[in-house]
Length: 133
Image (cartoon, rainbow, N blue to C red; front, side, top):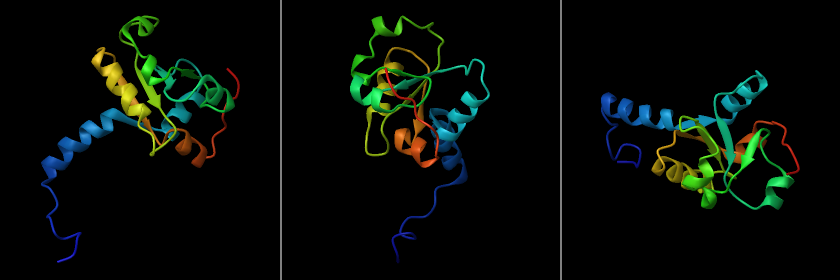
């Protein structure tokens, strides 16, 4: 028996339950880009959650706020209303800063989603970056 067939596929209700949670937690670069292209209030704050001010200045997703996950505190988050949705991203699949940020925000009771792909995904899609502080 090969590795694909070793375990049977889960029941449909198990898949639905798991993927509903994953799809609620995640968004992707194309969705964020489309919202920003539409102008107006996007309904969320995009957080760049890794690196240093220098790496952020080198390139970051437009309209993002530099806030490394280690600096997410109750005091810092008081700058935004409690119901503010945060979308977090990091450098890509090799980085877990977005997950660290999402965890910190959730522990503070803040709504959060993770932008899959991060900077690598943004670049792969061919979207422009901003530069500077």
